[in-house]
Length: 564
Image 1 (cartoon, rainbow, N blue to C red):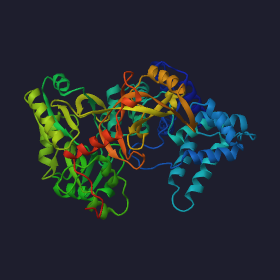
Image 2: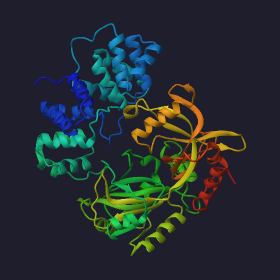
Image 3: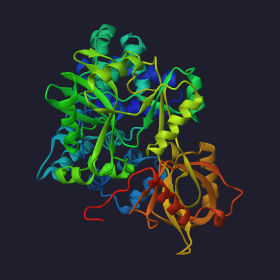
Image 4: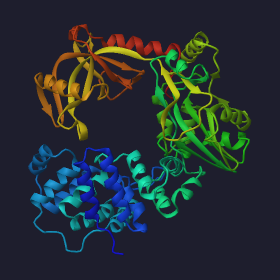
């Protein structure tokens, strides 16, 4: 069978971009899968969604937009003005490249066309290029692809390199298309993807072995599962009522969620994004190695940075540990961490994900040895639950998790078996600038620079940015309003008169060297417009400073090395 051209995949992307019906998109993708040769299926699926490697695979292309722009400029002789012109018309980088190649390249690509397998193999070679001279080698390989590509193929090559596919095919839709193509039940396709974490492998298994092959999948050690996610609840009462009180409450810890795999003496730790961080947390790996009462197991928990008294430190200090690849011994001393377990997904050959939360907790208690678990209670009513939530806050934690006692574990899903109830803070802030959006938000000012008034400097100082909280209609209206207040522009940022006041919700105030104010809001999102407030009525930096200090009535305060 002749190999499928990469042009066919690019043309598929164009069809999908122009299709609004979810059902029609699924049929188009299913037909594409049927036309692929078996050996092309994993590559074709991954390239279709713009995810060259499985999520758990540590390989990366490590090619920036600057590298892509450099290669395209060399191939087309484009000027800075040419780039500005195409970006004025394009909705994303891939489309900008297509327009530029179409209008500027003088030498047409050779008659020998790119294939899906050939492109995938070359992208693999790019990822494997490491060490001295690797940057040049990566660019040479990218140039070899783009020099053979048509304008349309160039667009989808760049989209894969930058992981910006944006044609509307979500993971869920692709899984539905795999189910339709293989005639397997949707639930088994989704279940296999939970365990394998690779759309390409799931598609190949479904097409080769059908539903029977999918049903045989199970959690695999050292291949991290996507974590089960929680729905936000407006309050504790809502979460308790939903499950008619058949819940447990746990402290919602302000740390980093980890999944820990153990096979005999080998322990590996993965983040919620499936990246391995074992090297950064050797003391956590050793604790599990010594304490776990199972030879082979997968545990879930939270790693929290703590001070010398064991109180939780703000989240930003934990990130010093997760980013550290050198000087680990010093980092352990400067930022000690504590592991708190809250689930077990696998133990000595048995998958536990289909057991109820209550059953899994009992197995966790048998498995954890002397390792700590998250604070937990089974409340007998709202009053008892509220008291536990207050206790969580007083201990320096974010809030509480509300977990249905009878719920199974569903990797990668955000269902209502788990709710999260967090303490939310708010400030009235002023918008002083906004960035142009891209993708669905193309053409709108949609990333807003938020500021407070500094009474000492008589100036507005930024404390963060957010694009969250507004509807599409509100984005459009806000764009019109801000453009009417424009003072000047710098690249993709429009600076405006400080006239628009918004209420902003957030979870924490962090110290920040990024902003002149010295602080930044964590998880900021706009809750409403404050038409009733003038800019001079908004909150001040002095108010923010007081709120920042008040946090440490519950949390520990980080001490730099050598500090008193």
